[in-house]
Image 1: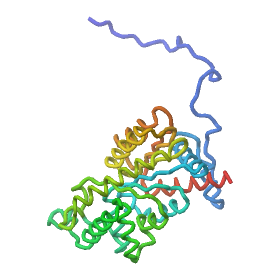
Image 2: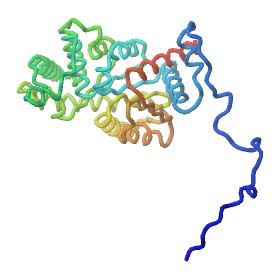
Image 3: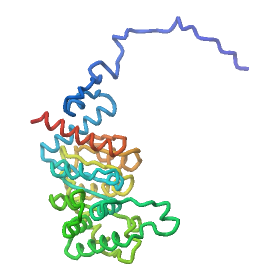
Image 4: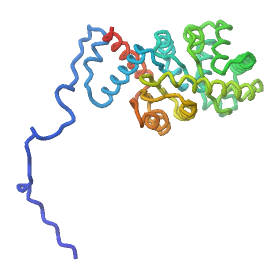
Amino acid sequence: MTERPKPVDLAQVKTYSVKNRPTKVDFSLMSRVPNVHQPLSEFFECLPGILKARELLLASQKMAEARIKDRAIIFMMGAHVIKCGLGPIIIRMMEERLITCLTMNGAATIHDFELACFGHTSEDVERGLEDGTFGMVKETAEMMNKMIADGIKVGCGLGESIGRGLRHLLPRYEKISILANAHRLGVPITVHVALGTDTIHQHPSCNGEAFGKGGMRDFRLLAGALPGINDGGVVINCGSAVILPEVFLKALTVSRNLGNQVRDFTAINLDMVQHYRPLTNVVNRPTRTGGTPISLTGHHEIMLPLLYAGVKSFLKEYR
C-alpha cells in the first residue's frame, strides 16, 4: 500500500536574490500614457515593447524599411477585408508604395466590383440559400464574367482583366475600388480562384477556360514578383485562410526553383483567428532559414488602420 504523503516543509526551500534572476519584462518596456492632443505617431511611441504591441511595432518598422529600400511589399487579401470597409486605406497604401503587388481571392474581387458599380455588397446568405437565390444576381455575374473573357483574349490575367474592365466601365463608386485603382496606379494584380467557390461560377456566362488561363497567368505573375521581397521586402497575408497561403507557397518554390533568391523577408499574417495554413505556409516555413515571422490577431477594421498608421509613424522618424 502507498505510504500517505506528508506535507513538505517550506522552511527548507532554497531561495536566491532577485538580482540574479533572469527576467522577461523590465521598466524600459512599459507603456506611456499618450497625450490625446498629440499626433497618432506619439501613440505608437507609447506602446509597450512587449508581446503583440512589440510585433505591431516591428511589422510597422519592417514595412517602413522596405519602402525606404524600395523593396517589394506584397499584400494578399481575402474578401472579408473589403467588407470591413478598408478599400480606401488599401488604395492609399498603394498610392504611397506601401503595397507594390496586390493578390486576392475570387470573392474579394466580387465584393470590390459590387462596391464600385452599385455602392453595396454582401448578401444574406442564409436567406438566399433557403430559396436558391444565393449568388444569383444577374448583373454581377454577367458583367464580371464578360470582363474576364474580354481580358483573357488580349493576354491579361484575372486581376488585370477586372481592373481594366472597371476602368473602362467608369462606375459611380470607382474611387473606392481597389482593383480599379490598382490598375490606375500600375500595381500588379493577381487573382487566384478555385472553380466553384465563387458566386459568379454559378452562371452560364462563366467560362471555365478563361478562368483557367487567367488564373495561370496570375500564378506566374506572382511567382515573378516574389524576388522583389528578397533581402528586406514584406509579404502580408490579410484574411485568407486557405487559398492564398497555398498559392503563395507554390509560387515561392517555383521562384526559388528558377534560381531566384527569395529570402530574408518579413512575413506577416494578419487575421481575426490564426489558422494553420497562413502560419505554416506564409509565416513559419518560408522564414525558417532567414527572415522575420510576425502574426497579429485582431479584427481587420481595427488592425489594418493601426498597421498603416504605425508605418507612417516610422516613415516620419526616418525622414
